Every structure is written in C-alpha cells, then in structure tokens.
Image (cartoon, rainbow over all chains, first blue to last red; front, top):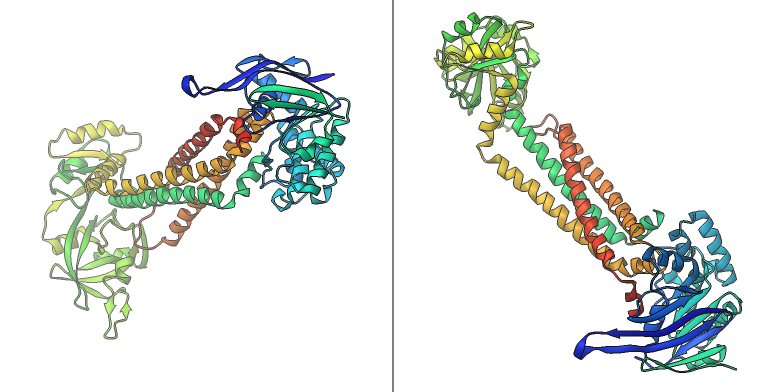
Length: 228
Length: 380
C-alpha cells in the first residue's frame, strides 16, 4: 500500500528577485513495508520535501496524501490529530528534552495525546526494551551517547505505532558502528508491512540498507529506483 | 501538568530567578504598603485609642492632633445641651517642652483627659493607677519614651527607665509620673504625656478645648445630631470615620504617599521586569521543545496550559514567600517604634498586583510560543 503520495508538489521561498524555487513539481510514492532513502546534495530540496511530508510546511501547489488522506485541505486540529496518531518524525538534532528522563521523553507523544502518565510510561518502557535501552530509562538524555540518543528519538517517534516514520539525517553525527546499528533499527522497523520509513540522507553508508533510493536534485526527482 | 512542572524545574536557575522576582515584588509592595498604612493609622490614633465616643466635635479649621484650632470652653456646654447627646467631654492636646531629671530636653505631646470620667485615658496602663492622675502634676508617660528618650542616663551611660514616682519638668512646671501606659505611637517619635484637663491647664496655661468627644444616646440618629452641631458655624461635628479620614488627609499632605507610592511602584516594576524577563528567557530556552510538542501534534491550548501552570507555580511560591517575609517583618517589629499594619485589603491588593505580573509574564511567553513555527526544528 502507498503510505505517502506527492502530486506535483511545488514550494518557493522569498519573492520576486530573491525567489528560490525549492521544489519544482515533485511526484513520488513511498510504500509501506519499505525503507526509502531520499538522497541529494545540499540545497536540493530534500529537507523541504521532508518538512512538507511531516506537515511542518505547506506546499504552494500540489497535493500530498498520507495514508490516502489529502493533508493540505485538512483542518489544523484534524491534521494535529493525524500527526499524533500516524506520523513519527525524527529530527536531525533530535530535540530530546533534557529536563525529562529518557522514559518521559519517549512517552511524550502519548501524554500529549491524552494518555495517562502511568500508561504512557508503561508503553515507553516496552519500546525502550525493544530498542535495548530500557536500562537507561530513568536517566537524563544528556547522559547518553549519540547513538543511544538516536534510539530514544526513534522510540519517541514510534511509540504511537506510527505508520509513517520520517527521519532527517539520522547518521550524520554517528560513527561507523553506531550508524550501522541505527540503520539496522530502521531496517527492522521498515519490515512491518503497515509502516513506511522515509529517511533523508546524504550519507552513502546508509545506502545498503535501502529498499528504494530516490534522488532529488535542484528541486526535482532525478531517479527513484528500487535498491537491490 | 507534570510535564510543565518538569520543564519548569528542569531550568532551575531561571525558575529560581522568576520566583525571586515575584518574591521581591511582593515583599516590596506588601511591606512598604504595610509600613505606610501603619504610619497612616498612627495619624488618627487619637480616635482609635479612645473608642467610647461616636462623635467628635472640633473647630472647622482643625485638621489633626498636630494642627488644632482650639474651641472656646463654653462650647462644651453647647454640645452637651444638644438633644440626643448622652455625654460630651473635652480632650486637649498640645506639644509642650519637657526636661527630664537628667536634664534632657524634649518636646512631648501633652494630652489632657476628662477629669471626672477619665475618657481619653490611654487604653493600657502598665504601671501605676489612673486615678492618681488627680494628684497635682500627676502624669502618665508612654512606655516607649519611659524606656527611651525620657529614661535617666547614669554617669556610666546606662539608661534607667522612667518609673512611677519620678519627676519631670513640663513647661517649667513640676510633674510627677503616676503611671506608665501603652499607646499607639504617633508619627513623630516624641514622648506622650497624659494628664487630667485640670493639670493640663496648669501645664499649658491654656483655656481652650481642642476636641470634644461625645456619645449619642442609644437609638439616636447620628446624622441628625451632627446636623444640629454643624448648625453652629464655629463647630464641626464628625463621626469617628470622618475624623479619621480628615486626620489621614492632613497626614498625606506631608508627601509621604508619594514616597511610599514610589517604593510600591518600584516593586511593581521589579515584578514585571524581573519575573517577566526571566520567564520569557526561560521560554526562549525551551522554545525548540515547545516547537517539538507542536510538531508531534500538541495544540497551542496544551502549550498555553503548560505555561499557565508554570507561571501559577512560580507566582504562588513567590507570593507566599514575599507575603510570609512581610508578616515575619510585622512580628519582628511588634512593640517597636516601627509602624506596621497589614489589613486583609493589603493581601487582596498584593494578590491582584502579583496576578497582573503573572498574567503579563505568561502572556509574553504564550505570545512567543504561539508565533513559533515548528519548521524551526528542521533548520538545525
């Protein structure tokens, strides 16, 4: 099933003389059960596209469908609810809240969704167990290594059993071993037939994990092929 | 809610800074106001220390116990003759020179009370007997000056409080201390000497009456009685509250309201600036986390509630600490020459100011967060 579908997405910044067309009519489809990489050089528009998919930006033109629902015409409240229930975003800087424990950071989306703190924490422990980091649940995220922090951010993104997981440059700050471990986690997550994983990256170390690699350059998709 | 609290206390320095700002504002506002109200209440202590009369009769030019125009003595009988007046007694008051046994000069306030009824006597006699005031030259001295400015100073410099049996020189007349009393202190730190009107005349060589304290008969219409008094152009009849307010107005002419008002205004400015600024900085430090909450589907309402909870917590803690410190100050200054009055209205006033500071503080931060676009998370 198609989890993410972009139809003729256009996005510009600035006006008149300073106008920059970041996306020039993007058409793409991301399937469930696959790990898709969106690759391209700096300034190619990949982060803009990811932001639009993550509902952080609105496209100037075009339509975006997440799980068959058209997002740009969806009312804000419904869109927020959709994001809480179906979308997991992992930012490049992770943004783990230092005043909360690891378990509380992971439980954050459920607490925001109105889940009781007790239940949210229980669920976060389950996820942390799966991520093999439960032993650090009560510590502050600032006491963790970069790789462990990345795992916490992933746990936070999947705690609501999101069917769409988008991630911005997950391996950029990781060494070879940690990068490999994190990509293995993403690979495992993408094997779920109901989940699509989209990763924006320019790190060639991630390519072997991909089911599909989409090349973007100068705001346009150059190629989108299944990866052997 | 716990998320808001954790984000608040996670930023310990800022949290303490905001609490300190609100504490300081509350302390300045409540303590300075309490001192001011204490001083104001001293300005009409003549009325509060003599609770039995419900009407006071004065010359229309009289403003307070320090700015008095005397009435001719005959007007006492005029007041007594007005229907529905149960009793009326003269109360005299004047500043008069004193010399202690040690030869120390001071300017005291001499208060003459009614010889027969003793109305006007101080509320609490600590030593001696009130009836002894009928002795020739008999006076009561307030305990603060008995231990302070009127105390004997021995050759080695030690102070021995004035006591019953000691003598004073009042306006070149010998006076005998027959008692020590406790009274509400006045604005000026001067000795307060009570005596009978008979002795008062001897000390002062005056034949006028400064105040006539009167009581209406039970069930009488006080307004009607006052109208009858005011029919005499040289008399002005006032209720207790009216005389208190007149004395307060006279006292406020000193400019003291402006001075204390500035202190209170400073407290308010400190509250708005320190609390508002530090909390705003704290919000800026957390802005990416608020953006994150938005990005993962949190609503502006949820974030507004979080900020409201945080501001309420620091506001309540700061307010309680500030008010607590003021109350402690009040206890510490009890029975000293320092003025302090903390009525419930001051609690309300301080609460309203702190509430306004908190609303301003929260509004600044909520406005900032509302304008924050979660796209900033992608820019890192």
